[in-house]
Image (cartoon, rainbow, N blue to C red; front, side, top):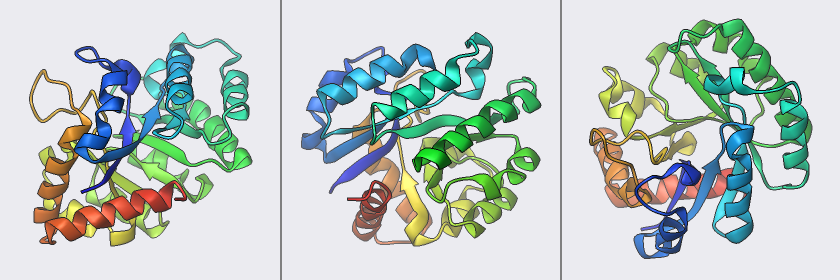
Length: 247
């Protein structure tokens, strides 16, 4: 079976080297990684991995809502510059997070700027959305056609709106803890469902890091929830991932 990990932070692993994870990927059926940066502090590491593995990695550069306070006024210019020199790069991870107690209006300002950059450069957008339903709803019409709500673990009510706009929804292991898990997983249209590790985060095992080799386990669990044939479901999400990256 073949997989594409549609959201991973290869630069953040503590227990293994990113290069080892990438080099062993073919043996475990993982063909590509969308390697996601979250602030200017890690964009260079993502870019370096992409330069070393251009056939394996699709880089994404964004400013995550957790890290707004650490940035200077030039962050948007820096983002635009790194996208300019990496024409295949995506925008993200960016978005809104109401769980961290940070001021949503400020988050919205930074998020809208990244939406504008993604639209202007015609790049896919990777979205972090946590406990921000009302604020996110107001922005749905502004998002690029190729927007991905990563590691979705929100409410069914919000999901219906996301689906109505035709955006992609990606699941990590975190969805399995959602009280509406069954309904949410079953509701995604076949052509819009993706999977990811969000590695090294979102492990099903407390205190452990998540690895790409676990994608097959996650896919099988989601297939069972959808009452789908496991092999056919894995082929479906692989094809969706290829469609997303235009391959």
